[in-house]
Length: 631
Image 1 (cartoon, rainbow, N blue to C red):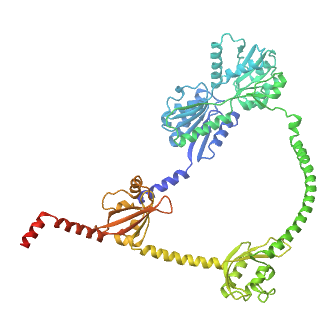
Image 2 (spheres, helix red, strand yellow):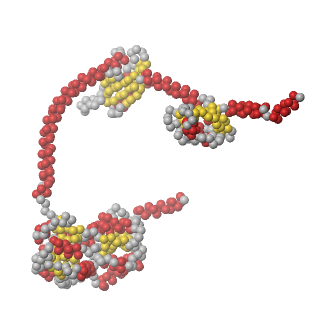
Image 3 (cartoon, rainbow, N blue to C red):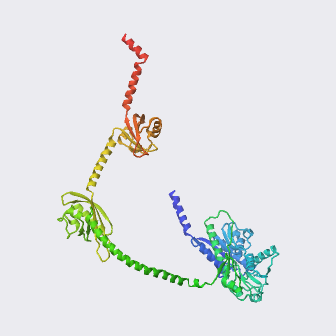
């Protein structure tokens, strides 16, 4: 067994030491705010766990041709063949498509996805273990938001490029438009203009219109432009409000929108990844929805004259009021006013209190001196080197003027024996380290009597300018010590009497278990005391007899008594039996009983013999034989 444990220990330790390898595949490129936010949230969520990331980017925002995607399949096919991963994380649609195409190479490796538009199980039908967060399209919510914020809205322009995500988002809009034919807002998708033409187009839009930017990273000419660059240009040149679907776009001048946070999505994916790696998921697939929030850009609301009364919306970039801008200074000023006023009042009160305290101190000092001298305890104040400073009248009368010396330490006075002087000097050293010392020592009084004193030595409060003084307090405990000695002698005598009593003495609890037993009982029954303690007294009855409590209860119904007696047989360790006359009465503790047992075996045997002889004398056979012998 030990050998098996030794073999398993290295495996266990290595499992904790080696990081869990995770392949992360992003559909887009590094530097894209959406992708970077997902990666940041993923790393924060897994920071406390031992997870190692291998990160790669497909760059499908710029390149989406079939030949490019096929080349990526070859690259990742080789990667998955040569490397073994504990899990695979994919963000957005192209990454999930790529891993699903390589399902035979992925095998049973769990896949965690996020940011998937229009999710269906067909998108991961070649994968065995899938868990992820789908991106719920917020295009419809933003259409409704634009109509709510702009009641006079007539036309809503939705910008979507030819990318896979852009097409998916536009299909969501088309489904909504088909299901709401009576919609009083015209939904328009502009042509695939170039970036410059699209910006010029938005400058000419009428006031009763608005723009919802679904996705427009690649224009009609195939040119790519970063998201933050385009959204900044669009909001600066557009003649109408611009609504967006991602929260990072708000800092570039967007009016607002029902937005999704890449960081929050990455955090959800990270938590899901930790559950996958820890085998906390019992059944696959696991699909969650990405969170969203209504966020509005306060400066843009002011620019377009839009009034907002929705308390559920989060207003960003809202300018601070005068009180908010000078909050710190106002707090400082208020704090100063609140502190300085009471400080002046406090100082005045402190001066008055100090004067009062001085008067009270004088009274206390006079009282202390009175108590010090009139106390029945022996009190002395000592210097740091042990010499006497002051002693009360009780101590002076106890020792006499001839014993008290002011020029030498207390323990060098002639009233102490050698052991007491040593104790006193050691206790004095201990008290100098701010520890109270307490001990007993013998002392010879001025009358020649030997007294036992309970002595306490402790340091007195002092400041740095004064050397510390010690307070000695002692009281006469000679009478108490003598009484304690007598009590110990009596206790020993009682214990000896208890053990040697020629009767059984048992104390039992409410369960009839033996709590104490004398030596005579153990010797009579042939057991060791430890074999009797804790056992029920009924275990040593020869026959099944009622326990003491049951016997007392049945007898109490017949008469009111405080002592109960009965005779029964006890079983000895050697198998013999003895007859015991039990006397039962309550002990001092109401929950215990005292059993006093007297050995009546010889008496019982004699009674049995006499009874037998009596029966024999009165029997017909005995009489016949007796008469015959007489004749």
